[in-house]
Length: 138
Image 1 (spheres, rainbow, N blue to C red):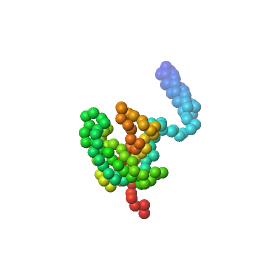
Image 2 (tube, helix red, strand yellow):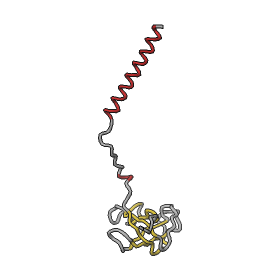
Image 3 (tube, rainbow, N blue to C red):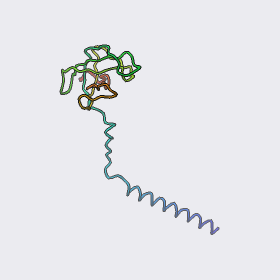
Image 4 (cartoon, rainbow, N blue to C red):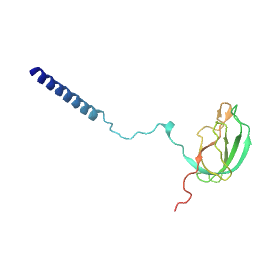
């Protein structure tokens, strides 16, 4: 009986030590600054609104791809509002279909002028998404 009581007391003491050590570790290792900045690779690029004004067929730069198109758009926001630019669609294997008059969001590729990828020039702008924000602000 005494051995059983000693075993129970020893277990309770061991659990108390483990609990105290855990509490001390939580306090000692708790981060002082609770903000975590996302890595730059996960940061969303700034986008501008644009409207598709023309679409033309173009030769695909990626072997095996067909039905590539050059999408010409006019920026409707940002520092270069009113300027026209373009990007290639269909080369990357995605089948995003844009049409004349579509409202889209584009982002500027942060690459030096004349940048090449796989021997092909990189477009200054790329499609981010279709404009999904409400056109009516109240």
